[in-house]
Amino acid sequence: MNEPGDLVSVIVPIYGVEDYVGDAIRSVLGQSWPHFELIAVDDASTDRSFAVVESFDDARIRPVRLSRNRGLAGARNAGIEAARGDFIALLDGDDIMDPTRLERQLAFMRRHPDVALCGGWARTFGPATDSPRRLAPVLIDPRAVNASLVFANVFCASSLMVRRAAVPAEGFRTRYAEDYDFLVRVAARHRLAIAREVYVDYRLRPGSIMRTCPPEHKQRDVWESQQPLFEALKIVPSEQERELHLFARFNAGSIGRERLLALGNWYGKLVEANRRARVYGDEEFVLAASHMWFEQLYRATGCGLGALRQYFNRLGLSHPQPFVRRAKFVAKALMRREFAPLWN
Image 1 (cartoon, rainbow, N blue to C red):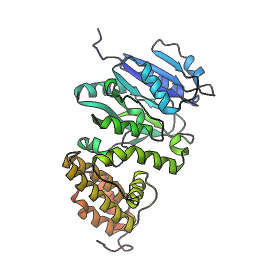
Image 2: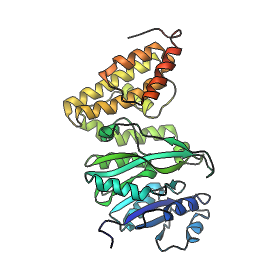
Image 3: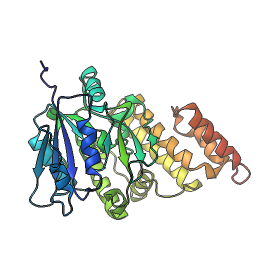
Image 4: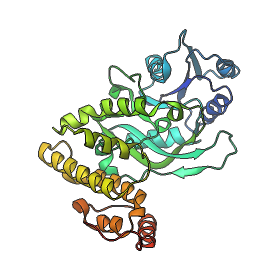
């Protein structure tokens, strides 16, 4: 007999993915955890995506067909409304679940009853299913996951599992990075986590919104979603700080000496703001800032020994990175030493 809460509702939004959605559905139907429902939400597709869904003869599939296009957020909300499970797992219509994902992720949630939402690692691959997979691990310290949202989105949306009771009343809101916006609102009330396990194969393809949305729209929406985080820290960023924060958030090009110094000052200001406001624990927030700062330093090895000096001096951060990555950073910075002198 199944225990209460055994049922996982897997929500797969579908729009213009006729070449990929069959693989997504098969990856769910082949799960080692049998107690799930697959809610395939067709967002008024104009191709044969819904016909592919209908070609499967499996009672666990519950198709939902929208009469008009509502966008990714609207399709996910329609799936949440139809869901019957206590746990909701997300999978985009062009991605692929690891065969044991639901079993392992549900076990993680049960071991950590204080966690309302859990993500995992992903492997990225190209448009074809036989494209080489590349692991994209999330290196953020487990203690710093909530605080990390001040700096970036470290979650893969197709790896998320959330307790139904923790879903905000508005669900997902329509905007670029609607998953980040959703995470910020869940994190305002609950603890988030990222399991160090691979849950999904994430398909990189040219037509995705990540690659087609205009940069100014991306920045506008992300900045709006971040405002509650800055308000909680009781900090009002200047226009220059806004530009710096979004530059780092979107990895928008190479980093020179002046910009790197400015970023260090900005991150230091955020650390001090949190110490005063006490929104996050000091250690938790410093770990999150440390992770993001190291990412910027790693991109700035063209600054040579200047970047290396900042690694040891700036913010008093511990930079908890794998040894191999730290060694690569030091080696790259030393290789540029003749081109960039030490600077403070």
